[in-house]
Image (tube, rainbow, N blue to C red):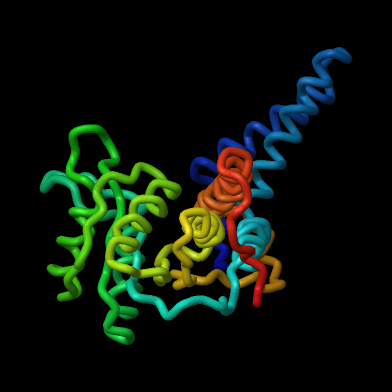
Length: 257
């Protein structure tokens, strides 16, 4: 990272505000009464935690931990479809469109469709009540941006568990017992477990596999984009715990086979 890039990273929000919070916490620890020192120490620890989560080292390590749960291969029936999970929408003057994460998944699904010829299912309900379902936007994008048709549009699911349950029901009526699941690598473990609970075998089709820490000094330079990456990874770790507590363990193990 150049000196100019480093300065921009550290002198712009949100990291500038985190650094100021850290400095304020240190000052409180130094000058306050004992009760105030405890508060100051809490502020310091919170700011340090925020800075660590913003480092490429921590963000990539969290993502790698999730990726390690993706099986390299699984014994299953031959896949009969490709299921693409929606992520988010983009809002602009022209209305709703698929968001960047969703677009990445559609691009990967279109490439997989060209390699395999398997029919596509897109899944995702409305992000807000009364809006166009995400799956409808995805089907439109597949045709307009990639020249690829979607055979099935599942337009009701509101979360990953719903994606799996409703998609499996659609494919089950077609006699399909296994399908590729296209989503980001950090999302795949939770998604595959959700599909396995339905009885449909999900085969991983990971989007954007992350690299591990490079071992350079810049691994420890906080960056706002890495804070976002850490948030996504921590959300997935928490989501896997919640799903297991709520829905029980998957019917099949995601251990590498």
